[in-house]
Length: 568
Ligand code: GLC
Image 1: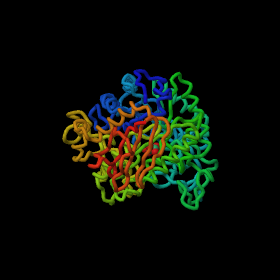
Image 2: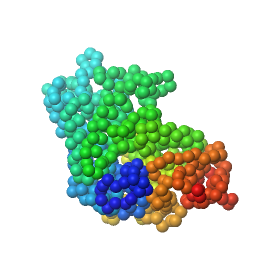
Image 3: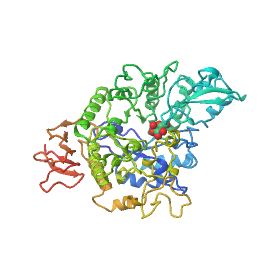
Image 4: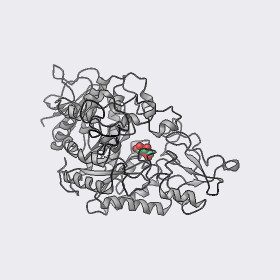
């Protein structure tokens, strides 16, 4: 439980723990949250106007996706200036005003730092292109001569996450075919060279730039990729995560994912965060192979928290979820860090649509793995409601991805000419990518843009909204006492008032197959029924909140979760 504070500060929870150990953090995907200036793209003015909504929802903090100047080759994850604001989103003064207003409203604000790569339009990269081989400017990136006759082949066999090879060849200033540069993502996102002290110093300056302006912390983009193996060895068929029979990253370090050396960087970043009177916090985006590898990022003296993607990947199945919860908690406990729980974000399919697929036990967080599998929206809705109560009842922090509180599904049928994710082009138009979870939020009204843009706006939303979202607007759901929005609000209100919730531990209680029942002290219990049969509430349980109606006998129905007071 967090004590609200009008100030940005070192406010602890009522149990004396720092706020971030139990925070519910709302992910604002800025392009799609709220459009203040009517150009069809979300912006800082839009966020400022919607702060009351977030306060009312009951979250503790916001994490805002990159808002820096960017040519938008990857929706802002290609940063051309780390210490300013993208003109389409506003100006620095707007950012400062947002920080002030959010703090006044008792909300903390995390930004998103992108340290693995910059934009190819970043002055450093432009300088590197102009300066030629072996120059200091090239040393800020990862340039290499090609292999093969005439250097026509890339330096190694690494692949881009978005498809195709991870290397692009440049033309040298004298017009000759030149070196190659590494980009683990799009060609417009050259990887920077973290063995160069100048890179390290520059990112430290960026951290301080925003911390000095009151930013409470950072989400670290692809936190597990910064350090590459010396000599850049080939993958030689190695996959990540490791396929059966291959060595895991723990057994034999992967050439560019989750290498142990990356932790040295975060120990230094932690010292920067701790140097502030109100210490600032970090959350790692690290898609690693196992909970034990994730926990390494949150060891004492390193980062504060890390997204728990095992929870995203877990199927809707009691045994699998319990194993994920147990292993997550054990590994985090071993290093004294709080776990986090997350169901959706801007990179994976919306969980309502994942969970609405029968039989529901095959995890699929890429849209292309879902398309063609029949979708039962009502089932997805019921499970999404139950999943939210599970998530908010678990020990530690939780993340809400904008729109999940409105029960938004993945938009699976965006017209091809609307798709903007680089994955679509890089995969040769075979993978639709992540746009389906990034469609602008419906706020009000009965037709697009559903209040996303102001009345009379010139621009259309940057991705088209389905007409069916008329019944998913925040305005409409606010008026329905049983809506998913009402459920989120009730759950977050209770979470603040119940001392058992947030940071701490849990005890599993006996439960029929296919259900999860646990208690948290003092006096709280949760049942999640993932089976097809009703599950009775434990004796003496007093209902606090339910994700759906109980059965006429007062039992917990299929795909339903219940919070109860245990009476002890
Ligand atoms: C992270 C971001 C994703 C982005 C990628 C490259 O995974 O969440 O959206 O495309 O990094 O920066």
